[in-house]
Length: 244
Image (cartoon, rainbow, N blue to C red):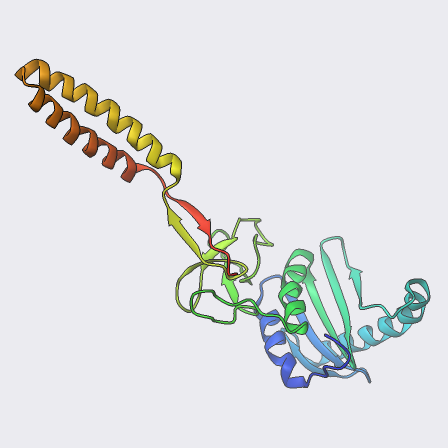
């Protein structure tokens, strides 16, 4: 988010609601520059006040040091609590966003938040629904995670392809449409197996009837039928359609 795009408190409400709905996120607090909790989720006011004080202290104590080292003010601070849990403190103009919880859950949750702060959106290519701050329940572990996550931050399930929560279309985590269709290999294999079956049955019919016409007819019909059945039995593959 650029310095010229000041955001009101209302802008952050959906962000806090989103973060507060995620499993693995224990606390989400928006802090004023003066050190007061403006909005908070998953904790009471007293806890939010403690978090706000911590955020301001860390922001002040680290800002000058990191600014001197980096040549510019730091965008945020990440405090490692116990190797698995973190506290992410991010300065956004005159506000501070604090998110505490499981490292993987917090990091996954902040990725779509960064898009939102940058004015970017993830939309369903089929219905146009804004999915930037949408959530998704992992079908493997049942945890609530960001819709934009390619893998579940809790069980590592591959979730790059999922259904749009509004229209039900099969899409990727970036909103691109996905279609299921047979591969070119399926057509080739079906043709080969159909041809083999057609030749075999045609030859058998020719020997049995003595008529080339009957043999050819039986071979053609059998080959087409076997090829069709083989093609139908072949698995479909998921193909992502570019949104561009």
